[in-house]
Image 1 (tube, rainbow, N blue to C red):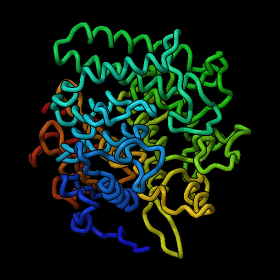
Image 2 (image 1 turned 90 degrees about the horizontal axis):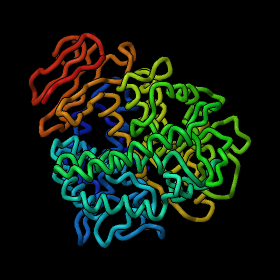
Image 3 (image 1 turned 45 degrees about the horizontal axis):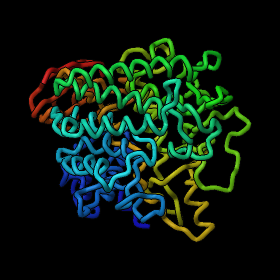
Image 4 (image 1 turned 90 degrees about the vertical axis):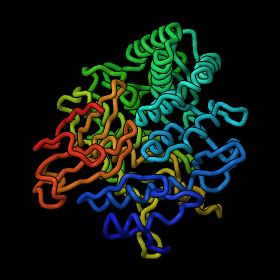
Length: 480
């Protein structure tokens, strides 16, 4: 295996990764540059840009983004799968040329798409793309399709109590301990979609649709809090349709924070993430708490959600944590250092060693204790190789840009820059050329002021001009 991802500097990385990844290259699409004194995070950032571009495919109906590089039998047309599509939009929105996502969004609601084969936070993800652009034309053009999609979910998965029920496999999370029923995932996704549809309707002046979906979101939020929150366990859990509450904390219990559902009193749930009796592991977090007797139980299947660490879930947890930290409601449980610690753990999991050579790698699920790729090893026993190579089932670059570097656009046209690391953890960081509201945003942290020539501390540049500065890596607000 050629060690082609080990590079020395941002300029060398730019040159190396301008080579095509299939039909597209990260820098041909205008990916932001990154320089920081954490070699692993920087390296995996460029690696993930490269692997993402391998999944942008031209089809007779426009460009789509795939999950697997090889064809798999359970995919829909053009090898598309809706399960990770939310991650695809969040990750791809930071390319200066993200026009391929317009095709991809329209694909899902065409006769070729199948957006409900798996759970999929479609409206929320498309709105997140438009939010970075500061242009909501795409979301507005799809509002009727998004309303129709929500209605179909209500028919097929909605229940009389107002909640949504889902099979764990159709959440993309087979063999979970909590099993099927009213899962924190599908219900949070539907809340996020209802909020997004209400915002899109408001922009179009469709007041009745705005009202209806705002009410749907408020009702669902109340039900998630009243039904899925286990007060004794201090955690959101899956509840079976017969009312039985799962006897396990699972990583999906953090998904409500991805969509800003919980109040500050529920931040206590985050103490379990960094507890080795629950979710913390060297290559974690684990998808189920370690103290449960069903943790890592073997089922003879390569894809298990009863303990193995999944990049899909880690991405959701990190996004949820960043939202909580930015809201200021993390209390004593999570802060910028917490985010940096988990992002570092996540980055370290992106490797494979074979024949004495170690290279950056992304696959399906991994052992949270030694970091080996479980599905890859299991499938090799059956003569299947590289099914999950360059697996596009999660995010990473979005976590670096919107989390670590803190670039977070808001509906009112303001930009918050709130880097998520302690001032003593990084000597320097530079994100150069992140697109936002049609402008180019650069974030610089320089502990000494010697590396970038922009002075000591945190500096934000808009189109190359200084827009905000702070001595500490705290919160800056800029109106664009």
